[in-house]
Amino acid sequence: MTGNLAIHADGLRKSYPGPGGEAEAVRGLGLSVAKGEFFGLLGPNGAGKSTTIGMLTTMVRPTAGRAEVCGLDVAADAVAVKRRIGVVAQDNTLDIELTVAENLEFRGRYFGLGRRDARARARDLLTLFGLFDRARARVFELSGGQLKRVMIARALVHRPDVLFLDEPTAGLDPRSRLHLWDVLRGLQAKGQTILLTTHHMEEAETLCDRLAVIDQGRVLACDSVRALRETVGAETVVTVVYEGGAFDLAAVRAMARADRVEATDGQVRVFAGDPDGVLSDLVALAAKAGLTVVDASQLAPSLETVFLTLTGREFRE
Ligand SMILES: Nc1ncnc2c1ncn2[C@@H]1O[C@H](COP(=O)(O)OP(=O)(O)OP(=O)(O)O)[C@@H](O)[C@H]1O
Ligand SMILES: [Mg+2]
Image (cartoon, rainbow, N blue to C red; front, top):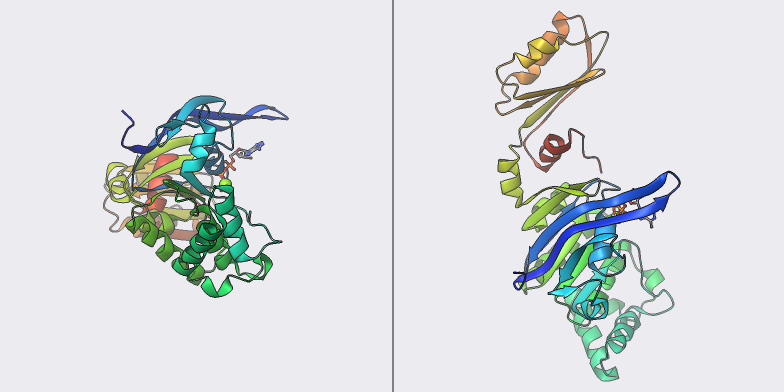
């Protein structure tokens, strides 16, 4: 039953032909988003976020699998899907020849609004987004934060059921980012279903009811931030980088508080449910073995450590 779902995807795949054969950008991805939900796709560069949004918004044809938006098949009913969704792409897609208001009005006309209605809708949206005084500005005169707000406003002209945002705050300064978060929370409070992609952990934590952590085209985990922390068993991650020999891994593994130990050349990492004293014990072990500790860090349980636990790799912006 997908009747109450805004988005449902199952087994989605996308391969691109490449020099070394087919490159799989998305490898069997499934997700469900309820109506009214604020859902996040969190993943590092190249995880397949934009490709996934592309398939859900009918812009990219899936190689396999299927997806429905508002109960409509994205491949078979693409035209109908387009009328029910608003899409804010990763790059600026505004018409730079037009003013801010014209960008919105033309979109309204495209979706069948009369001239007067399109103008009224543009005015309302620009007011809502704090951009009314920029209505006559040309797009190239706007700041990055204003550009994004205009793009979101334009995506909402035809009152879409689902709003898709691909990394809406990438490249924005912290103040603009906070402002945009307020805007998005306000939209959700009015009932807007939103799917956003981000590689900004704090953004995912702050905004999203649930998120799918994706990496290399697959969903690694999907839940609320709190449940992810609990079910993935996000632990404190203690990392020591060292030089001058090899760590006594048996001794590290024997540490009572080390639930999981990972070692690569020159680095040892301990996942610990109870982190008390782990860092100092590791430093002491290094000293005993005559090693030089060149870096040491301790990450409290967070989405960052969830990602580390799931992939064994660090999540870098
Ligand atoms: N049109 C394309 N042709 C070939 N390969 C592509 C194409 N689009 C994406 N890819 C590849 O597919 C993979 C996933 O890309 P995608 O853009 O979906 O990732 P992303 O999660 O959006 O990354 P980013 O955070 O950098 O925006 C990458 O390896 C990328 O190089
Ligand atoms: Mg992308």
